[in-house]
Length: 416
Image (cartoon, rainbow, N blue to C red; front, side):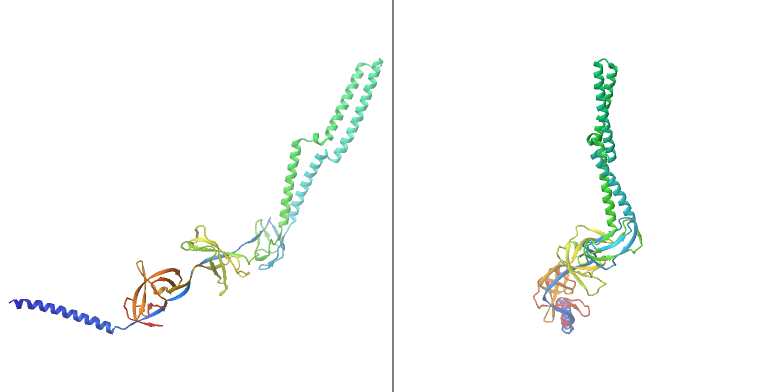
């Protein structure tokens, strides 16, 4: 009876063992007959990696000059054309100057009048006034002398009883009157006593105002003749001869196009990567194949809104401009952020991440070996620096031809 009881248990055990054997054989056969996966591969090599950041920017002259109409008026003559190179002091534009000449003449007349008044005050009056006062003063002196002689004669006659006391008093009064008239005329002939300090201050202030008016009018007149302040190129000329322009209207723009800079707009995450003197390449769609070079002049100091972007403004100096990069054009700039010479590198597609761990699949004897790696700082659009975990000439899988998943131990065939 005991043997009969154990028979079903043994049968169950044998069944499990048989099933396990069948599974093992199945896996073994699957492994034996499984075809290799075709993969693209790359060798680990030493490379010079460069990390760059591209963005857009606008070309601007370093020292622009915009000529503006100093007053409303008509453009009489234009001596240059857009795109023309000019020399320092060269006459570029002449505006109608009739009104400015009138203002200058009025100002000069006012100044001359004020200066003449000052001269007259310092000289004791105008020439006619001085001649009149001198004549009156001479008459007053003669009258005083005559009054003195008359008084002396009457006093002598009074002593002889031939003249009364009232006659002597009347002669004395005439002498006093003549003396007072002479003193008054002498004071009028003296500049120091004829004019008060307030009079002098008022006239000097009038002269100063007139002088400032003349300077302003002369400056306005001079500005009607627009001249080049330095050697450069006319890059904007929005007016024509006979145009009437309001005060402040832009007449032309010029600059030395060999000295230009670019205001570039970097997105906020890239601002911290920028540094002064980093190398920059510049391209302009209008000139395909042409590349200019420069360097970072100033880094952003704040973040601003630029359309829908938050950006920092960076000034880039162009080192090889020769008049072929025009102001106000939109360009693409690429800043070299990092340069790592002679570092191990693999294609970025060959790198995998899981959590905080980075790894690649090395190809060893036709199989994939999952290998942890340390990633370096240099990253380009296609390559990435490997700081540890691989050796030069190691072969790593990039991807499978049929997009099947790469796994540790997977048998592979490398295809070109």
